[in-house]
Image (cartoon, rainbow, N blue to C red; front, top):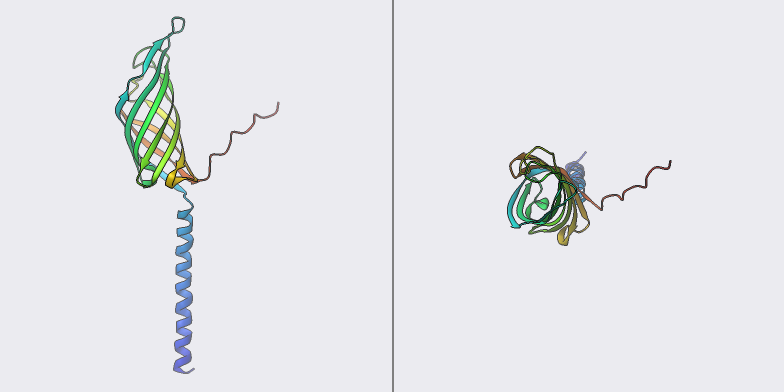
Length: 184
């Protein structure tokens, strides 16, 4: 084998190796570009922007709070699901007061430099526990602006008063529709 043939053979092997590494990197990049991500982080209650209109029922020991608004923040391991969180929530309290327990629904928007997320959520506070330290939430996110075509789902687990651990998943597409009830 002459020197020219050896150089061409080595160049070919180097080229194939380079293509293999680049190809592997592009596959990993393609997976990241699809939008899949495991989410972990924290969220805080922030500042109350509007107090709820509270009413009570004369027949049922239930407190109703409508229009409670907050401005807060959420920080996760994925910058796409971090930023300023504006939300409004309504609640039905089982018994009046902070220890009465409640169910909650709400909507909001998470915004950052890359885009925004429309959020719908539900939560509950167990009776006989303090509302600011034991409220659990499930949130559904729909990407807007720079995040259009992406969705996310998280759970918020209380860690201390007005603070939560956030766990979830970010994914391309939409949540699957609710299935029909099974036939009887």
